[in-house]
Length: 145
Image 1: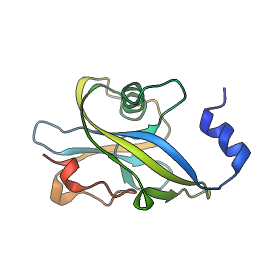
Image 2: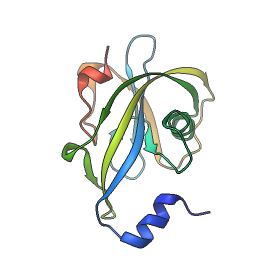
Image 3: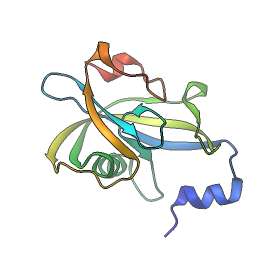
Image 4: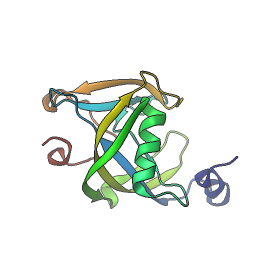
């Protein structure tokens, strides 16, 4: 079955699309931040994804984190909602998006140890001063307490 986003892209091509989405802030016990290295060569990001029709933002963050990390989480707190020109991104295939991101702090309920999503190359926890650059500019104050 085609995703909603795939159907939209079939209609509008690579043109700019406003995309309601979510991202997860997950820390290990030492306070390091979980990041996902994308298999497409886009670099590192928070576990994140687009909200599908009929989904709540909370349901989306739970689904996306499970797909991309293999972790069952519960969204605990909304850390902010971000968007605007700074959250525009052009994918390697030319698709243009402007994310409107609800950022959740999430708590891990269970780590299944493997992810099911082909978007993930690897996962890693990073200290504030050792983070690689992210594809979208979340404020560092929202990522670390």
